[in-house]
Image (cartoon, rainbow, N blue to C red; front, side):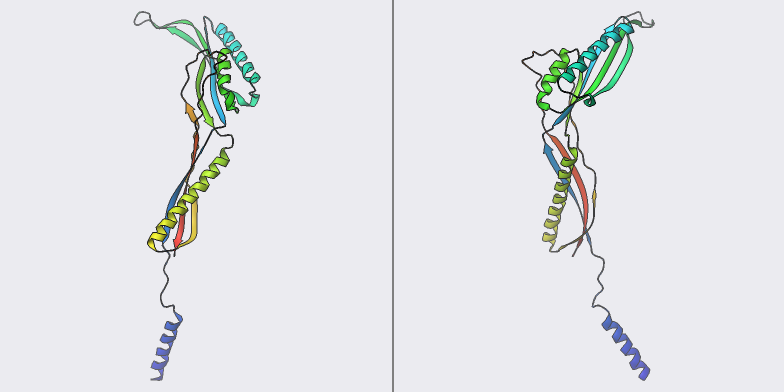
Length: 234
C-alpha cells in the first residue's frame, strides 16, 4: 500500500511540474514587398559612329579616321572628358555588287569602314547641342541613347526601403484582420532590384541648324526592389 502511495505521489508531482499545455512552434507569416522609385535621369550614354566608303580599304580608312578624329575633338570641346569616351566598335569590310548574273560571285565594288564610340554625357541640358555638333563633325550614325543615374546606389536604397515598408504594411493589415500579433522578424531577403537604363530608338541623322538643337525627352528612370520577409505570429 505504501508503494502505491509513493507511485501516485510521483505521478502527481511530475504532472504539477509540467506546464498546463505544451506550446507548439509558432506559425510563420511570409510576405513579399515591392518598392519603386522614379527619378529624373542625370546622365546619358550615346552611341555615335562614322561610316565611310571608298574604292579601296585604305581610302575608306583614311576618310573615316578623319571623321572620327573631328568627332572626338568636337566632343572634348563640348566638355566631354577622355574617360567618358570609349570606342565601342570598329569594322573594315568590302562592299559587293549582287546585281550580276545568277550563279556568278558578287563583285567587290569598294570598301566600308565604320567606327563607333560610346559617350557619357553628364550635363543633360546640353545633350541636344552635343548631338547636333556630332553630326556636324561627321557622325552619320547614332545608334541610340540610354538614360541613367550617376548615383544609382542611393536610388536603389530608397527602393529597398519602400519595399520593406510595403511588406510591413501588408503584415499589419493581415494580422489586424486575423486578430493576432506580429512577432519577431525571423528572416529577410532581397529578390533583386531592377534599375533599367531607359533606351531610345536609333535616330535618323540629319544636320540641324545651330539655332535648333536636337530635341531630347529625358523622361524618368524607374528603380525597383523586392524583398521577402518572415515573421512569427503571436
